[in-house]
Length: 279
Image 1 (cartoon, rainbow, N blue to C red):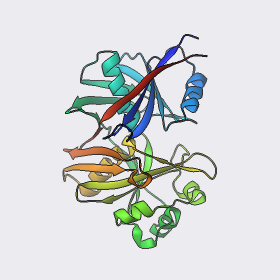
Image 2: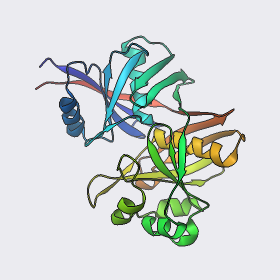
Image 3: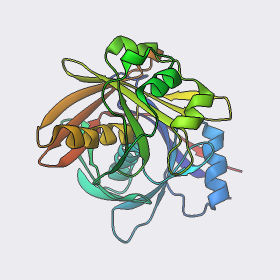
Image 4: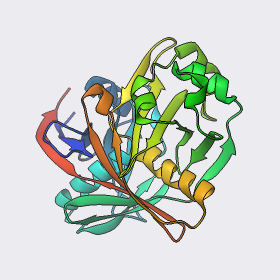
């Protein structure tokens, strides 16, 4: 097989080694689904993306975690946008085709921004006490009803009473499997608390029967947070900084703008290195 070029990037990064790592395969045209999954497992990052030709956008992008394909995710969208812009000379405003839809992206003031699709929502079935137990928190840590939101990837939005509660989360795998399994069968949990500048957040997902991982920066969850804001706050505009993964010393900084029914998520992208795969 010919050598396959890739780039390593950090997305939502304010420093060289901050943000959420991403591998982008510059041309995935010659790879099968099994090849893509194997490459993603080799990199073992939250996600690896594969650029492909598109008839409706600047590029088509497929997103793989080490174990499954995703229809949409935020940090792969913005990291891929950086590579598409540089590699295909696509400019600073274009669209990317994904399984979850066609996503408009643009670069302004050094930040890439995506425009989220309209969201579906439903109430979580778990009670506040059950959600608190799932997160290893006291019952009074949960604020208001929790919702499933879906701008392309369905995730639970759980508001907590304070930043301290966000940092204190210790999810219980058996309870996550019971209460936070989305319609695709994937247990995921996004928690957040309000701050003076916006929100502090964390995102957890299960990587095995009893194994929980934490994501450094989750753009799809931030988009769903914007959709949650629209659902719960109506037409009230929002211009927020969303900080994530402070608790695990891998800080990500996301911008979240909600206005006139539209949700935009942004962040800085740093290209860390380039290389080739061959087998």
